[in-house]
Image 1 (tube, rainbow, N blue to C red):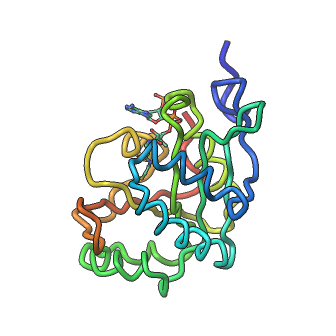
Image 2 (image 1 turned 30 degrees about the vertical axis):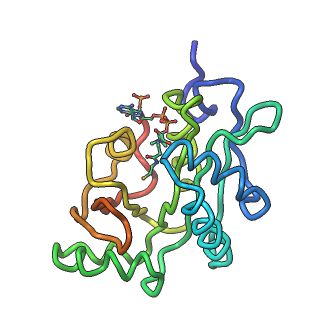
Length: 188
Ligand SMILES: CC(C)(COP(=O)(O)OP(=O)(O)OC[C@H]1O[C@@H](n2cnc3c(N)ncnc32)[C@H](O)[C@@H]1OP(=O)(O)O)[C@@H](O)C(=O)NCCC(=O)NCCS
C-alpha cells in the first residue's frame, strides 16, 4: 500500500528534505532543463537569477533525492516583496482583476520541477506542500504557463485559483497565469 500523504512521496526511494540550493544549483538547473526545457544559454541566465534569489530574506529550498544522493526534484520560494521584479510584472494584471492584495503576506513559489523519470509519483505535491507548510504567510502565489498542463492540474488540486491570465513576462515566449491559494494547501 502507498504511504498516506505526509509520509513522503509515493515512491519510497525518494526523500524530500532541505536543499542547499546555492551549492547544488547546477544539479537543480539540470533537472529544470530536462523537466521544463531550458537551453544551455537559459541555464546560464537562470543560474545568476537563482543565486540572487537565494540572498532574499526568507528564501528557502527543498530537494527530492534518491538514496545515492541524486537530485530528482526541487522547489524554492520566498515571501513576496512587491519590489521584486516578478511582483512588479504581475502587479498590473492582478490590480486590473482586483486581486493584487494577494501580493502581500504571500509566499511565492519561484520554481518547482521534478525530473521526468520521477514524475507522477507524488514528488511534486510533496515538495510544494512541505515548503508552504513551513511558511509564516497565510497564502501562496505563483505563476505557470497559461495552458492546461500537469503543473496547472497540480496547483488546482492543491487549491490554487487563477488570479490573472495572459500575463506577459518580458522575453518569455508564452503568456503565464498567476495563481493563489490559502495555506495550508489542500490535502488529497
Ligand atoms: C508539475 C510537476 C512539478 C508535478 O510534479 P509530479 O511529481 O509529477 O506531480 P505529482 O505526482 O506530485 O502529482 C500531484 C498531482 O498533480 C496532478 N498531476 C500531476 N501530473 C499530472 C498529469 N500528467 N496530468 C494531470 N494531472 C497531473 C494530479 O492532480 C496529481 O495528483 P494525483 O497523483 O493524486 O492524481 C512536474 O510535472 C514537472 O516538473 N513538470 C515540468 C516542469 C513544470 O512544469 N514545472 C512547473 C512550472 S510552473
